[in-house]
Image (cartoon, rainbow, N blue to C red; front, side, top):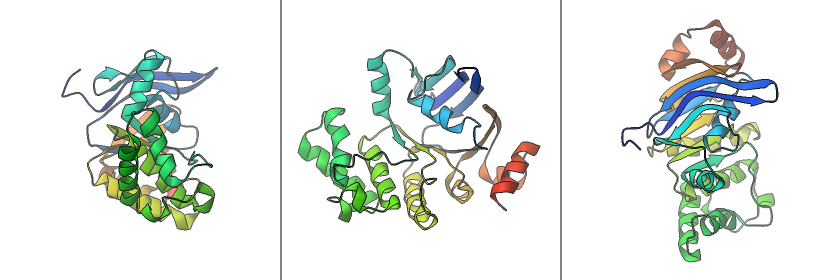
Length: 247
């Protein structure tokens, strides 16, 4: 394992669902502390690409490296990878019978093997970090969608991972709740955390991304700094996409 290795690296990664090729030779390097936004039309492979990083989806060809080590392997190895990479989903995936605090504690106890008092202290600190500490004893059904997603972000942060993945974290939210979640994500970006975010929120990309990755038909079509990407796209496909979502 190289100390100079990227945080995450894709090498000629291919993924099929039956006859459908979701990823077609993806190459990408994401540096430590880098914030990357992945965008593109529906079905372009964005979510599949992110889910392959922690092997929620298993690719069939190529290699994905986390800090220089391959993510593929036996079940014990994959579990170790998932401990090192946090993930926030579209749907919040909170346990409905557990409070916000308990949702943030359970993985720490079962996976990281932390003592209860330590896990609760960490959970409360991250609930404070996402500005929802006062809701620690509330159940998911007592929280708004934006609040639930902030609990989900705190839960991911509690594992103190090397990187955190966001798979369209605002797409299930009502418009008035999107801002509160994006504000939290902007704050996290300022902490120097390696972040990979699939999103259509181009304002967020402009504000925090180090690089924007545009995908179409399972391929990376463009990679550029936000200022460059939004000023002058290299391909007609990217121009058409931005014209639709920025109108």
